[in-house]
Length: 388
Image 1: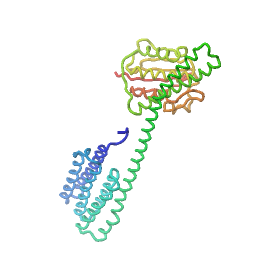
Image 2: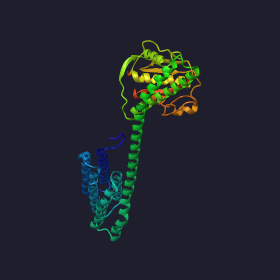
Image 3: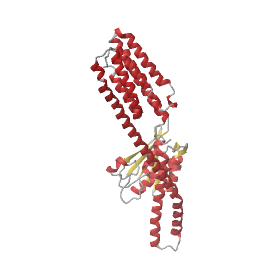
Image 4: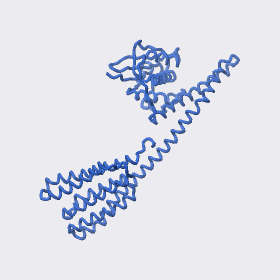
């Protein structure tokens, strides 16, 4: 079943639970009425007992096994109780009309318009027959023709609106599934040809016969190929998060070792490691390498060297910082700094997913990432909780 779609079993169970709350409310009001109408204690207790019995049935019966339309049969019990209440109180409808409205509101939230139409018949009969049995004057009984269409209309309006919302949600889910499939297919399918392109460019760049002019074009092509590779990797990570397929494998490891590796992977001439020896952390090493690579690459592209990776323990947490010495983050960029497809300054080769991936992976560890201004540059702080 698509993510975010409510199952038929869950719909039935949810409708039944709301019905139980409605009947329990009616029963509770019946009990409270004993204080104001002690002369009708027997009638009030009987009505309250009937309400509580139906509420119990809504809670205890296996509604998950049945379609949500079957829950509508409970409304027949509600109409019967309200009809008896109208008769028992001599045609006084001040206490029953609100519950007719509430019942059709409940039906509208969970049932189709077809169900609303057929429940209109027993609802009208219960209301009119209760008045007739109580000896109500003809004009009061005749008012049923005005009141009940209004009550039923409430249910119909709500039902149509809810169905329109469900249809919109279905369309959005279908569009999201199509988008997700396209993104995943694109990201997977372009990685192999990109590897071949990158390899061919490296061979051409290393060829002594390659002229300086050609080498400049090769370097530009290599940068764009690298950018597309990073975009593909980011899209795959985005898809894993959206599908709930992101899995962590936390182990204990030294932060210094990982920081040294990240420096070698990015640019050891620019990235400086100032992490103390012996500082360990419990986290998914592969994912945290991805976090540090994204942060150091972000610092190199948008900031300026040197890029300094540091870490320290603060209480039970471990803080890992990546600081650059560039112009810093513009104030207008701060609100969307860690959002999807947030772009940096013009002229950079950012794909807009790096910091979003950093935030997502850090939060998956129960941690957080934040930005702090530095003089000069910017500092990004990853906080990883380690427990007590």
